[in-house]
Image (cartoon, rainbow, N blue to C red; front, side, top):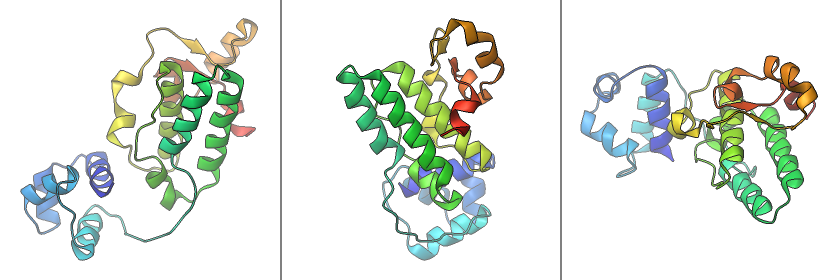
Length: 189
């Protein structure tokens, strides 16, 4: 988990592993090992690396489910054929991400969603991008991947009379993935 956070923070600043190593007073090989979860840095080294990126490390225990944990529930619900319930779970994920402190938001979004349904996988990806970008937080590599984009447009509410309104009011994070959901749906949660 540490490696994913470090890599996302480094890439969000456009730094190479070498540049971070110089700033963090360590070696590029160490950065590579940390990011690939081959080794874990000491708390002191982790703190120095994040300080070099402009972040402060804090330890905060929390019980909120991660996006990956929510996605397992959504996936099971979809397997059982209950798409309405799956969408309600999506709204619950949005509620949680809206209310959580920005310091915890990145941690909840580190692991990719485990959803076989491509539409819902793109929907969750858009949601993670939406919340992280609004809080000016780095995106994890999985959320930045272009392979999450749907090949055909998906209007989540499936109401053809509202398509133009929804298209105009869909946040960019969703529309880039070919998912169309009015931002009002996210605010009313």
